Length: 431
Image (cartoon, rainbow, N blue to C red):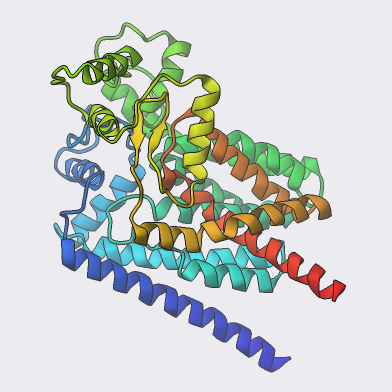
């Protein structure tokens, strides 16, 4: 028994060391090879962070690099700004920090897998995540793609622990603080606020009344922590704006601020008719002077033989669903409303790396979901609820990029190995 325990600890230590060495080595190598040449959206966060340092936070547009800067939450730029203040105008410390945070995701996967299923599932899932390409790919970048899944998985682990406790503890407040940080990094995750509140009631080990008390603490603390940036936004825009301008499409209707001149309304949606007109002009071999990434995509798609058209609701949701869950790409196509070109294909390295670390798990993930429902695993059902919520958020309510799935990939990995373990057990019993 002692040997088994020792071997178990040695495996955990090995996972930590291997994961960190891979991430740090990859991050430093890529950064030294390319520097900031490969940065794109990164400059929005860097610009935001620099403006925080030089101008403070009470300016209308903290980032001026790209047109979508108004959609950036303050959470991650604050971290970047802190790094720039401490280490100067260099991004290597951020790469090192990303390597540490990404390594911690592997450990959190082990802890969740062990608590919800068993230690073997936790170890296997954690070992797989050590080499999981999407937990490694963004280490050399100044993006939130490492921090968001880390916070999300950590919040899930804390929720599990809180639901098992009979009394309210400091963990309740820490979870609320982390959730507040998460939504200040990406306000879209606020959709989990009502989901978690309801789950507090139904997943509490004692009873729903005990869960209700925990839900009250969670609600009060999160709302309280949202007030400072709400005050900042009101002073800047002179109207209620929750975290970022993206929420204005919702709050403007409530507070009737449509005509306010200095409201952050510059992020107008491009009319669908423009893309249709551009498409007709290109097909008619007319000169199209309009620019923009979407129009460039249409031009490229048509040149490759892919003609866009306005999607129906069912076409849109199906295209977005496929893009969200895609493990490989061999052909091109359009997503969204029918005019956002994706393709023509990923590189061989991209297809292999993602297909062999994510795609190969999908059948076992579905199998794991089946066993979760069959055996009525309470926290497994909680995972499925979160995965469905995340899919619904991007496919139906917002829009899809393949990388937007990363926050739930940890749950997919855990459930996949639970499904694989059950399949092996059933086969062994038959033999």
